[in-house]
Image (cartoon, rainbow, N blue to C red; front, side, top):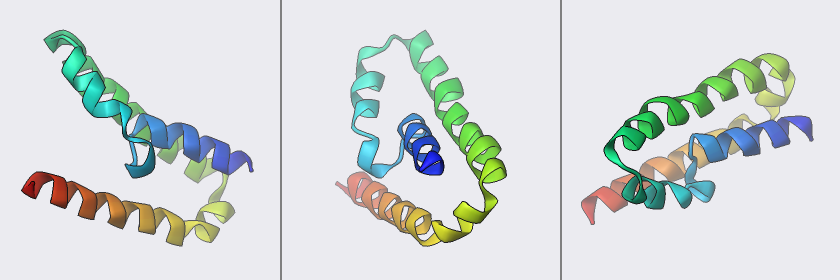
Length: 86
């Protein structure tokens, strides 16, 4: 349960596909300096936190949820592809 809490919080920060709805609106409303901070720091912070905390603190749970993480990643790739083509 603790790993799921870490994963959910970092997936919002990354943002991953089911919880990425806030990102386009944030990029549109922010000024240029804020956009640089948002893209340069905040988005990378979620990935760093996931790798630093979720993977190192819960290595056994990562093996259990590997298929779930891969599935979300493939959905994100396909979603991004279709959005770009559109």
